[in-house]
Image 1 (spheres, rainbow, N blue to C red):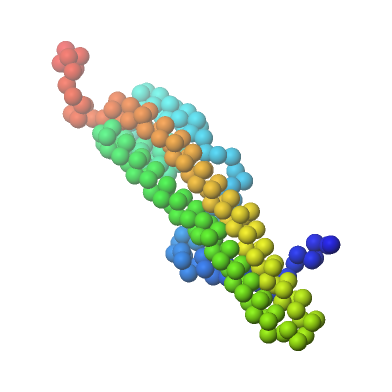
Image 2: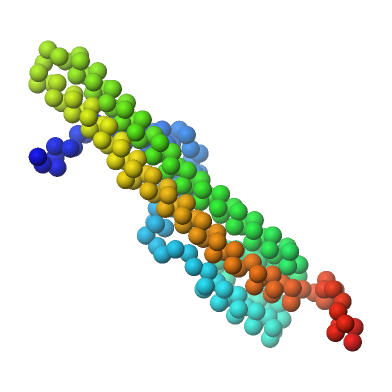
Length: 219
């Protein structure tokens, strides 16, 4: 038995094409684009907040020496951190900075979930498309019972379609969906670590009028 025994273009077209079509019909175009764009991230190492925490510490030193407006001249590539720094420069309260980070984290989680849901939908559709291919093969087989040479090809379509559906669902789409969800949960937990140091920085650099008056200030 050779690998070519398990290759059938018609069965593959029915299952693969049907799965793609079903996924496109059940998912918004933007979510499908996110699902495809998320594939390269699977090969990268998981998100680690340590580098951003080190940058926050560096920004804190800059603000302590030169004031919060010096933060405007720093280069911050991470969008969540950049938004928080901009809020700190504008004099927003720590609660506002924390809320900005939480909202950004929530939106990112929703985007990641949408991408994972597309792949989960493909995993659900593939076995159903395999059954469709099986039915097509069986119909072709029963309509050609008088032609023994055609029965084998129709039976191959019927059996291989089921095989392709199971393989696409369990070895491709479902694993991708699960890995994307795991990566999203990990990144959300890592980004939550940024809230406290940035809130502390906002509290220290907030305008004096917005700070509660302490005994030290009164002295």
